[in-house]
Image 1 (tube, rainbow, N blue to C red):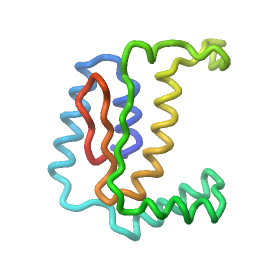
Image 2: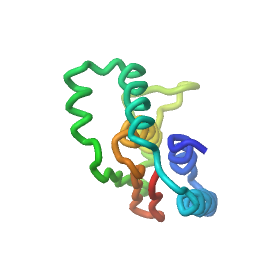
Image 3: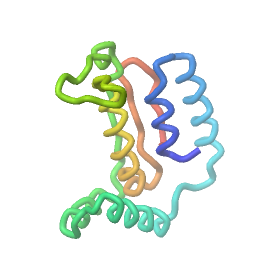
Length: 134
């Protein structure tokens, strides 16, 4: 399972039991991983990310300055995240929630951060167990 998919799956889960299963599965995969992405693989993925989001060279250079840092996310998974965003309309004219916005944002940023943090990023939640080395 890709790093991005693990986070999307965990973030989309509102059922705590489902989240625990995903977390345990990911922890098992992390413990069995012999090595993490090589520098060449990370650089190639970084270049793909830069092209996909059309990031200019100056900003891409500044982002590369984060290379090697331990990157963590702290995500609010409290009940207030179910509040709908009033100024945005999603599919079926249903307003997305704060949780939907967080999932989308974290998914994109984890995609980038995983190219910069050699052992993967860690995702912490306020009310759940964290996910390590995503």
